[in-house]
Structure formats: C-alpha cells, structure tokens
Length: 237
Ligand code: HEM
Ligand code: HEM
Image (cartoon, rainbow, N blue to C red; front, side, top):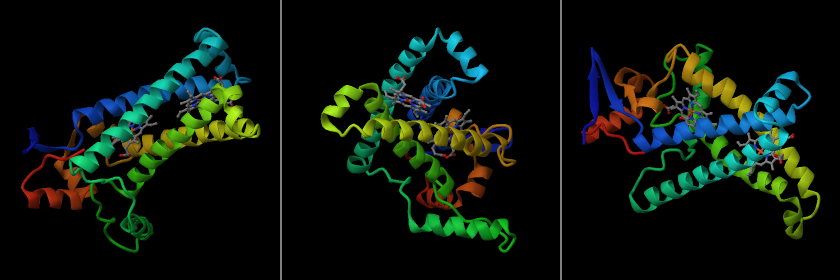
C-alpha cells in the first residue's frame, strides 16, 4: 500500500485521504459563511457589517443563511464524529488526535527550544500539540456553538426544559466563543499553514493530500519512522 509520488527531485507521501481533503474544504466554506453572517450581526454598528448585511439581502436573509449553514455545520460535525468512532472501534484506526502526556512534554520542550536552550525541536508523531489544540477547539467549540445556536434559535422551546437564564447565558457563550474560534483560526491556524517560514506561501497538504517527505522528516519524524519500519507510506485517516 505504498503511496509515494515524485515530482522533480521532491518526494511526497500521502498524509490525508480524499475524504479528509473534502471535509476540510467544507469546513472552510461553512465556517467562513457562519463567521461572516454571525460577526456582521454582532458588530452591526460597524460600516463594514452594514455593507455586508445589505449585500447579503438584509438582516432577515443574513439570519436565515446563518441558520441554514448552522444546520450544515451540525451535519458535518455529526458525520465527523460518527465516521471516526466507527473507524476507531471497528477498523482499528489509530486515535491519533487524542491528547497524551507527551503533548504537554513536547510543548514545554519547545519553549526551551525557542529560548535556544536545546538545539532540536520536539520530535512529534502524526499530529503535534498545536494541531491537536486546533482540532479540539473546533470540535468541542463547534458542538458548543451548535447547542447554544439552537437555544438562541428556539428560545421558547428551550425554556420548556431549561431555566430562562439559559438564553442570555447561551448568547454570551455563542458570541464570545465565535470570536475566540475566529481569532485563533485567523491568527494562529492561518499563520501556521500559510505564513510560517517552513510552509510559506501555503501548506498544501490538506488540499492535495500529500506532504513533502523532507517536511515530514522535520515535522512528524516519529510517524515517518513508524511508516518506514512498517514498510508502508500510506497513512490512515
Ligand atoms: C462556528 C460556528 C458559529 C459561529 C462562528 C457563529 C457565530 C455567531 C455570531 C457571532 C452571532 C451573533 C451574536 C451576537 O449578536 O452577539 C451568532 C448568532 C446566532 N447564531 Fe451562530 N455561529 C455559529 C454556529 C451556529 C449554529 C450551528 C447555529 C444553529 C443552527 C447558530 C445559530 C445562531 C442564532 C440563532 C443566532 C442569533 C441570531 C439569529 O437569530 O440569527 N449559530 N452566531
Ligand atoms: C485558507 C484557510 C486554511 C488553510 C490554508 C488551512 C490549512 C490547513 C492545513 C495545511 C492543515 C493540515 C495540517 C497538518 O499537516 O496536520 C489543516 C488542518 C486543519 N484545519 Fe485548516 N486551513 C484553513 C482554514 C481552516 C478553517 C476555517 C478551519 C475551521 C474553522 C480549519 C480547521 C482545521 C482543523 C480542525 C485541522 C486539523 C488540525 C490540524 O492539523 O491543525 N482550517 N488546515
């Protein structure tokens, strides 16, 4: 099951399956629409928000779009959880996104690396601690946005089962979590995958499914060693 490709003198290894590539593209599209339709409501007093709301057909259309895309986001999240649970339980997929003690160790070790106290960065496996942080932020933060989003959408139904205070609480959580996710993706994830010197101008792995072997050696040396030992360079999800 070797899946390597050569282009010029560069060698590429498969990092993401086609389904992962499509899933990430869908996540980008849905998140951008939710952020634009949500944040333009939050910052409705800004000129740029008002221009966006008018361009999208007015506030009713903006809210409608936010709700429809919110449902699609929920479907994407549910399929991600279902597919991965089935894969891990029935198909022996490695749960490589689980947080371990090694991640805490790697994070502390890299502080020493950035201070120049050690010569090499931490040796990471399939996902490093930063990638795991982004992943859990989007998954848990996303589930939380779905729950609070539905409470805001159906406040009367929600208060049949929950105390009334849950409505303002949901609003505070939904709006602040939206800002947190937006800023972390815009500043950290986009920096890491576009502007960081190692990958500039773009880390194409999540779009093509392939990663250059040299980068794999630098960023995921433990996983590369595992693959070489197993004699295969096709990665699981
Ligand atoms: C990552 C995903 C999401 C982001 C970034 C996001 C962002 C936002 C923001 C910034 C607001 C404005 C809050 C304010 O006025 O202070 C908002 C409102 C709202 N969101 Fe979301 N949201 C997300 C997901 C969802 C989901 C999944 C649903 C449920 C279907 C939802 C339903 C709502 C509702 C009902 C409101 C109140 C305003 C309205 O009726 O449109 N949101 N959202
Ligand atoms: C143009 C915008 C974006 C680019 C260039 C980009 C790029 C990437 C790349 C290269 C990876 C793979 C990193 C690896 O090798 O493991 C990745 C993973 C991921 N991306 Fe994005 N991404 C973008 C937008 C987004 C958005 C908007 C979200 C969600 C709101 C998102 C969520 C994730 C998650 C959860 C992962 C898996 C964890 C990780 O590897 O960091 N991405 N992205």
